Image (cartoon, rainbow, N blue to C red; front, top):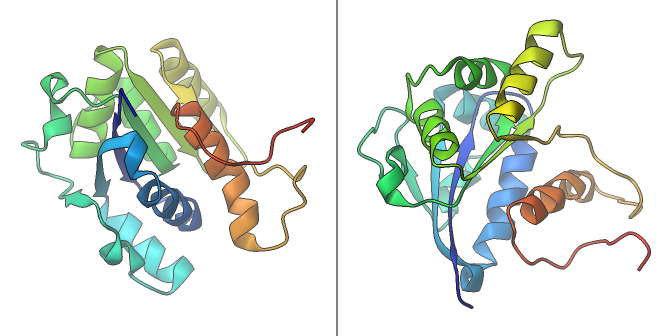
Length: 188
């Protein structure tokens, strides 16, 4: 398949580790569409993952993981030519730093690079309710070219398991990233 994608996935400490887990598992099944998948997790992300999923299954995934302070990671520069960055789940603190242009770790630096290169940034925000600062930060990131995709499941497909519910969001994110997947389609 021509035009394989290079994707960076950032996992932050917001609740919603199941979204990151399901996304990474689905990406591992799409090698024909992907040139590279790189992953960076915040310290809080690993703690939340252990709490919510009661495992460390991210360690079993076939992707290269980067330390949150590794500014030598290929996606820390536009010359790395990553197509897409998915932050899943995206904490409001991370979103606020991105909206303010603060590149104090690899997640916020990579998001800054993606935006300045006019590539695709997908922020899967997982917070409720939103307060005005959250809304303004979402607006700022949207105006800069990012996509805000709240972790809001749909129920058209009648999901039965918690994984199936999470996958209604994950499949939407994969669609936004431009990947071809088998998923529920309205009207089909």
